[in-house]
Image (cartoon, rainbow, N blue to C red; front, side):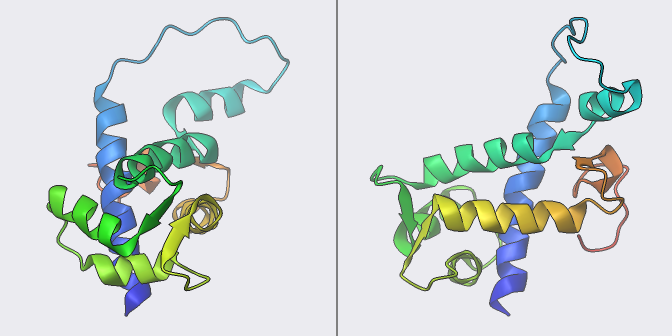
Length: 145
C-alpha cells in the first residue's frame, strides 16, 4: 500500500518535470564530438536519459529539503506535497522511499528509488524514456506506469 502511493507521488513529480521540459524550446545542437551511433544520439535528443531524469527529481528533492540538511524528513515531504497540492498520501509515498526506515530520505535512497522507477518506465530498456514511455505525456499508454 505504501509503495503504490510513493509511486503516485514520484509519478506526479516526474510528470510535472516532463511537462516543463517538453514545453521549453530545445537548445541548438552542435556537431557531435564523438563517433556515437546516430540512432542513439537521436534517442537522447527526443528522450529522457536516467541522468536527466535523476537531475529533475533531485531539484524537487532539494526544494522539499527546507532545512538544507541534505535529507528530507516526513514533515518536510508532507509540506512539500501539500504545497504542490498532491493528491496522494505523503506518508505512504515517503515510507516507500525511506528504505532504511530512519525517518529521513537521503540522496542515496532517492537515487536508488529513481533508478528503479526509471527502469520500470523504460519499457524497451534502451536507457532513454521516449515520449510514449513518460507518464502523463499525451502519447503515453493509458495503463498505470
